[in-house]
Image (cartoon, rainbow, N blue to C red):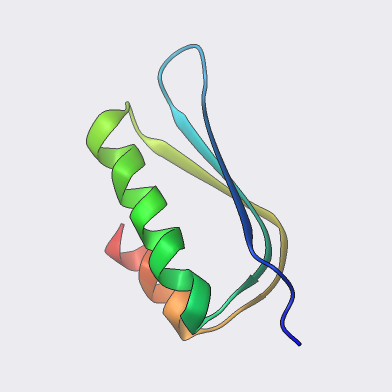
Length: 68
C-alpha cells in the first residue's frame, strides 16, 4: 500500500511560495504535485519545493519538477 501524499502550500512574507511534500510521489500523485507547483509560479515570486518528507519519487514526480 503506497504512503499517502500530503502537499502543503504556504507563502512567505516576501511572496515566495513554499510547497512542502510528504509521502510518495508516484503516478497517482504527480499530477497534483505538478499543478500545485505551476499554480505557485503563476501567482507568486517563485517557488521552493521542500522534499525532505518524501520517501519515494518515481520518474513522474521528477517530470513534474522539470515541467514546473
